[in-house]
Length: 232
Image (cartoon, rainbow, N blue to C red):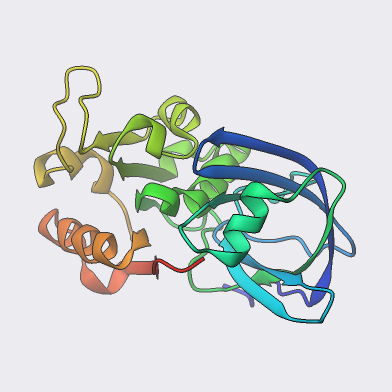
């Protein structure tokens, strides 16, 4: 794979803003001098106060590289300076400092068959991959398994379901499937033929998903992990 694209600091203007749930905010930016990203990359959002105090956090990109706008989906966490501002204060028309795209390890360019396992807001970079796969007709090359407590806790739930993702809810039933994490026997159809695996979610989820993939027959050194903590 060639070097992944990378961009410096620039300005993004919020063109669209929505709250899909009480914890989530979806932001779509027009980005000045935008560098096209690869599915799986992320951006840094930096806030600057009048006294020049700054706070910044990284957020994965949800949009397909072909999308004219840059889409981020942010989960508002208790005490989160940046996520709280984006969720509660930001408005359409606001301009924010952005840096990106960033990252070259956790990207999928359609070059190998892959399986993705994501938990909660960890689905965001996987959504970028599925949108890319759909546009290029590569859905058979990218299988997806996602886990959340409830349907409302899962960003892009309906879109992922339409894509054909296996959705496991742990706190409520989904159709005929009782609430439970995914089991190795449920993974068989999704890991079959995969030459690479992507795991994204909290530290605890990443540990669980990595073990699940290995129990399902995925070779350890083909698994790429992106994990995050509780600050945002």
